[in-house]
Amino acid sequence: MMKNVLENRLVILDHDEFMARLGRVRALMESTGIPSMLVSDNANKYYLTGRVFAGYVYLPLKGEPIFFVKRPVELEGDGVVYIRKPEDMAVTIGLNVTESIGFEFETASYAAIKRLRDIFPTSTPVNASGLLRTARSVKTPVEIEMLRRSGMKHTLVYSRIPGLFRPGMRDIELQVEIERISRLEGCLGQFRISGDTMELHMGNVLAGDNADAPSPYDFAMGGAGSDPSLPVGANGTIIAPGTTVMVDMNGNFDGYMTDMTRVYAPGSEPLAPLALKAHACSIEIHRELCAMMRPGTPCKALWQRAEEIVRDHDLHAYFMGHRQHAGFIGHGVGIEINELPVIAPRSRDIIAEGNVIALEPKFVIPHTGAVGIENTYVVHADSVEYLTTAPEEIVYFEE
Image (tube, rainbow, N blue to C red; front, side, top):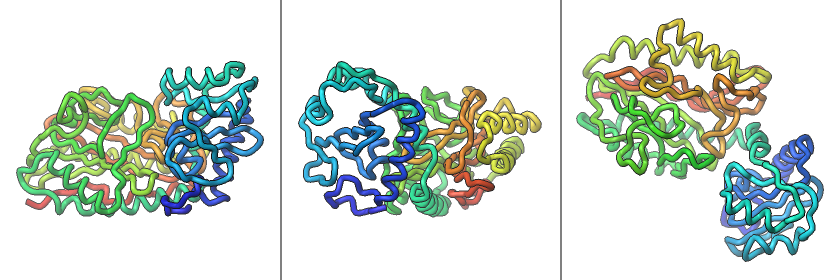
């Protein structure tokens, strides 16, 4: 993939990579009966072109894509058409489109969709959001290599976390130090999330009982946050002996995100046996599910197996939360942190070769904090590949 984003070419993907992604989307368009689509979501535009721009990608099932650009100026390439407003697209596409057009109903606002529909009044609008999420769920070798690079840098940052701790430190102070070294290692800082129901800064650092604070967001772990305007994550809790600090920080180093969680604790006081038992259970779940995570496996079967292990260890009351429980233990990652497939009890997703999945079976132990790990894996035909390789046991800070 071309990495010089200052060049003027709009599509900066290698030609073969561009055609592979285009071919995957078009195969799904053909199978679902969508003859054309208009893409406006930044994550999907990045997937199709290798860059983010203000405008749209018009993608017909047959024929060449058209890239309608508002900003930035001076982008070049086949199919680039500059517009001042969305209505200008009709001059190129034609006012009397009678076929269906796919729009991103799940990410665009009602006003944006209505405006686009009004441009093509004779066409039938259909929802293409699910199709694009499905296309992106199976990564190409180029995407997997980008994720490998993010995983290596992500792991490097975590190796430096023990050296950041100082006795009496608050969770937000540790988070700021992690953010600093992450940015210096090249982290882009952006935590790209699909939809409007989740918000987060550069990640989640949860100390002690703050891990048990319910959050309005659909994350595996919540936290009260520092302000009601962003009620998730660190809240100023002191990292105290006998408690844990769970670190789940940003792994976006090149536009593709790995997801990794590790647990740390001050070394001056042992953790409760229940917390150690639950942490060991999380690692056991990873091993079991990695052995199962092969193409063709229903995602709900992975959830069921994890739940069996948790019940065998009598840890169900603490699994995926204590006061409030998350309803999933894993999810796809890539351009966004919440991609397909989803590992949940009612998931209809099936594991496919090329999926990149973050597994995060976690526990919240009252008066101790959160334990458990999260790793990002690539699904191959007969194995899984670890992209996040930091030590999985609880790491004790020196005091």
